[in-house]
Amino acid sequence: MSPGTAEALWERLAPLAPGLTVEMVAEVDSTNTELMRRARAGQAEPVLLVAQAQTAGRGRLGRAWQSAPGASLTFSLGLSLAPADWAGLSLAVGATLAEALHPAIRLKWPNDLWVQDRKLGGILIETASPGDGAARRYAVVGVGINIAPRDAAGLSTAPAWLQEFDPAATDAAALLALAVPLLQTLQAFERFGFTPFQARFAARDALRDRPVTLSDGTAGTAHGVTESGALLVHTAAGMQAVSSAEVSVRPVA
Image: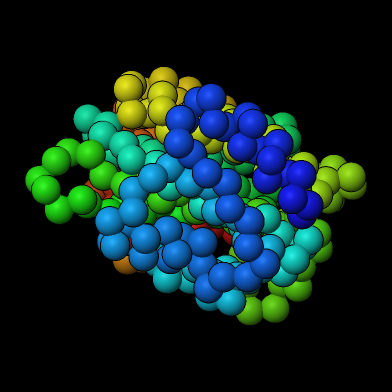
């Protein structure tokens, strides 16, 4: 990714978030980890951090996320936010990323981008408190997307990659397509919450009306999400609203 990409990104993002900086590094343990370190040290400026490679990339529930230069896109956007309710943020982000990339992309609750039941990418959202009791928190939105083919060995879900349906796709082009919509989504979510994004998520919901199994073994059928982003699952005991980030949901083969 060339230095010109950073400049082009900054020119697009800075008018929307004054003071925002764009940083590109060859390697880091994790873009999310780095921005969270800074936030805990009192650095809460808006920043887009992009890494060519991560040595300790991670996803939800502590899962590893591998990345290699040119073969994947890994970045984190850090921004101070104070929404009335944080619920549904990962779904809003997912809907925005999918819409910006390709019509074939679906969303697997709560934070994965899927193509034909294979994982194209993931979202990891973390927040840090300034410690002064204020409602405002520093949100770090991490995104990882496969650009080129990758080995499926050791993966719980087979991978998909952007070049399958967009042969000319590059990490730089994908980043340029995603950055502005992502920033605008975070700003809109702060004002309006998940409600404006509910229908957009539903249009790409990969689990809706499908048999699923929860991490505790509960079986049921997915029925979309609530206005707060909770997953509705009809089980033998009735309808359940699954909202915990610690619950894993898998479609039944």
